[in-house]
Image (cartoon, rainbow, N blue to C red):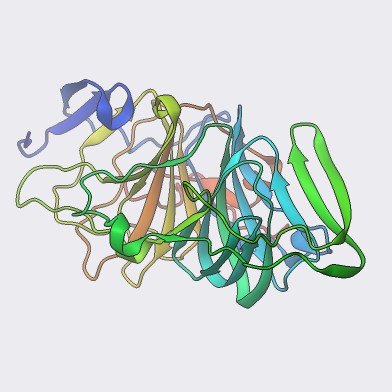
Length: 348
C-alpha cells in the first residue's frame, strides 16, 4: 500500500513474516522518538570493539552479547588456533564468519571456511580450528532449538545443490598426542573437560545426513520486484519456527513501512559492503530491535549490494554487560546511533 505525502503506513504483524498483518495509517512518524529510558531499547553493537584481552588464553571462549532462554548471540575472535576442541552439549550453533577463515575440524570431518560463510554445527559435535588464514572474527547464534537448512524460494534465492558444502571425513584414525588432548563441553551450569591420550576428532567415514554444513552469503540472492514489498529469503529455521534466519542482501523492493513485529526479536548482522546499509557501513555491526518496538530500517535497494542476515527469534533477549559496553542506543529509521546516546564505543 502506498501512502500520500505526509502519511505513514505501519504494519502490525503476528508471527513475523508468516502471520496476519494489520495496516495502520498515521500522520506521525514513530521511529523519530526523542529519547527513551529503561532497558527495553534497540541497540547496535560494535563487535570489533571487544578488546583482545577478552579472548586471551588457551581456553578463551566466545563471548555472549545478547542472551535469552535457550539462545545467545556470541562474538568470537581468534588470532591463533586454540589447543582444545569445543562441544556444545545443549545447543546447536550457527557460526557466521565476518573476517578470516581457515580449516575447521569436526568429529564428522573437515571444512575449509572463509569470510561470509555460515557453518551449522549441531549440538554434541566437537570441533576445533586447525589453522587460520588470518585473525578470525565470528558472530555465533547458539540455540536449544534444532537449526535446520530451510531455504525459501530455492533455487532462486539459494541453490543447495550448487552452493552447499559438507564436512569431509578424515579417512584415518586419531593418532596419539603429546601429553593430553582436551575437549571442553559447554553446558548450562558451566564447562566440563574430558581428556584423551589421542586425537578424538578424526573419523574413518560418515554416512547419512551431514550434520556440519557450510554455505556462503555471497551465494544468497534476494528476489526482486518492480513494485511493492517482498520478504527476504529464509535460509535456516527451527522446530515451531522459534528461530528463523534470513538473507537480506541488496534487492529491488520498496522500502518496508514502519513495522511492529510483536512476536519476534530482530537481530541483524551487517556482513559486507562496500555499500553502506543506512547508517551502517562496518562488517560485524549487529543491531537488535526487541519485540514490538516500532522500526522501519534502511532501504534495501542498495547498489552495489550490501550483504547482511536477519535472525528472528521468539526468545526474549537481553543485552549482557559486555554487550552494553560495546553498544549504543539505536534510532530505528536508518539504524544509526540515537542522538540521545552520545557515548563513544568503549573497549572492554
